[in-house]
Picture 1 (cartoon, rainbow, N blue to C red):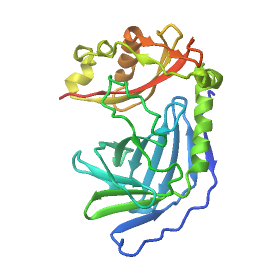
Picture 2 (picture 1 turned 60 degrees about the horizontal axis):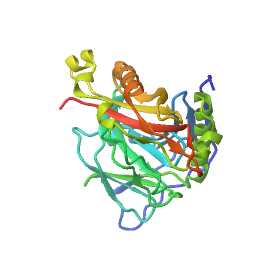
Picture 3 (picture 1 turned 120 degrees about the horizontal axis):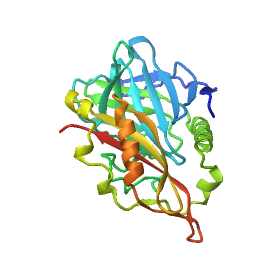
Picture 4 (picture 1 turned 90 degrees about the horizontal axis):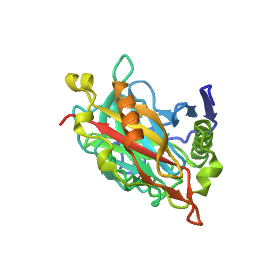
Length: 289
């Protein structure tokens, strides 16, 4: 898969319906079809809701097979002056959970971007042993077939993105991820053989404060780096790939070079307890305290 392509998922957008007593929620119907972005390093399901200055783009980003996804929200309505807690809920009835997003900007007009964190549709689908980053265990989404996403930024700003049923769009995202793995040299057959995932055995030695890239350090710049590791049956890293990063690209090179050289794993096992090749993903956040 060398050529980047996009897949449109033709779904009929639901009309926004406000329940009685919820007039403070701004319901944003979909204004574009679902699109799957076949990036060489990750798969993104995205759609715009609302129009003009009220528009919000939702991105569901998946870096590996499974039900976990990273959620990003882009648009003027999600602007925050500083990093602080917001609340998000999936489906109806809305059960809000508190998240503390990372702030960012995109484009020449510096459109606000919220990195909302990681979520999953399966309570067993998470990397609990990811000690190299500040990524918490992905928050569970109550139902796989949620049909809306509600965001409460403060008492005066509540938005409901009317997503419609998510089964078909998420299936399209799964297909993209399968193709992505094949392009990296690890087949879906190999991934399906894994019964016990690989477990890192020396995360404390992967990265240290002395590894901080010099130029970004002097500039006071931090970064979020998503990486994918192909772990061999012997527990060593065969390949590291940067799936996404913010700010200086030097962070990606340093992260992959050092983790490839230092990381050791207890290899993944198949149902018979035989070590097999596997995939391990991680989010590393470089920051200056």
